[in-house]
Length: 495
Image (cartoon, rainbow, N blue to C red; front, side, top):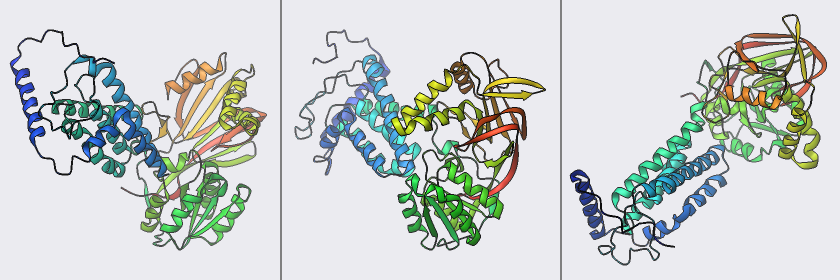
């Protein structure tokens, strides 16, 4: 491989300011080369080599993932995404825009020099950009992990000057570019902190310093063992009941009869069951995420056992809205979403195929089978006329899109139902994609959206599938949905 610096190019003309800056850059480089850096010789060259091709940061991401907390996994993913953006920018634009030769190694002691010298152009530093991008991405998602990664990233950047392969300005420019890449990724995919609902309206809840009075029912099918163990470490006097999915409702009913605070660990369906029982018994609810998606817990701002334990120990919590539905005799509540049409059909098809080919392939097969059918899954009467619909979606609270991330609720107590409809017609896949991309548009030939406090739908055909918080049942006749503002008391840390 040959260098990508064309040394036959004529030197640029005189430019006083640029020449002074380059001269200052060279003096700083020589100053660093002449300095004695205590304890740096056995560390910085090795660290610089370890960061080649991003290997060091992939190892760091693997270590973060091994921590097995949602925040650390998100921090690892965000760090790698930021690194990818920075590397792509450096290799396609940065290195080719300013074709600066590498520094002359004469002032640098031989013991510091790398055994294999880089052959690309000098400006900007790719190592510094990758280090800054990864550290920025991690810190934006998890400040604690960012504080741990930051010194390593700084050392990698400094190692490039120490080993003589970059001028200080190369490193500075790379670090700035990497930081910008981290914030650019956050603009496209917001951090969890950006999408957590405000802590209002606040409410006083029982303070349980050691968890005495908390009965936590955990769905063991959701893989909750680690979370339950962590909660027991933080609240040693809490009573924890682990049970199979079929026994969840019965165990929650028993727990409600003796608990000061009802707790639940599981997915959104399990949390839905616990919320209905907590409402009926007028108990505060403590939610520990233990499922795959955990929409309600994450929108609430509760991610792990430590966060929940601190809220319970301090008696901190809020009131949130609940939505109630009546679908021709089938009654219930939902904390997240309620839907008729394509989505319940897709869930049914997915469950039919999942045991044979796995969950994700079954989801793809289910989507293809549902969207290729010529029959509209939902016929409803609106204004005295029957209309074919592909989808009726109702959110408990308004959903907002932020960047490329899926829509999330920014307020769990806004008093609104977020109603979205995809009208019947040809090409359902295109209509559904258009509705998803458009967000809360109020009027369109393919879809519509409105925020209300109550919804009524007549003429729903018998046997029409209904999905709420991940559970599927049947609806018939008249379907009504209404909002119950500030109905449920839940624990969460307050700012």
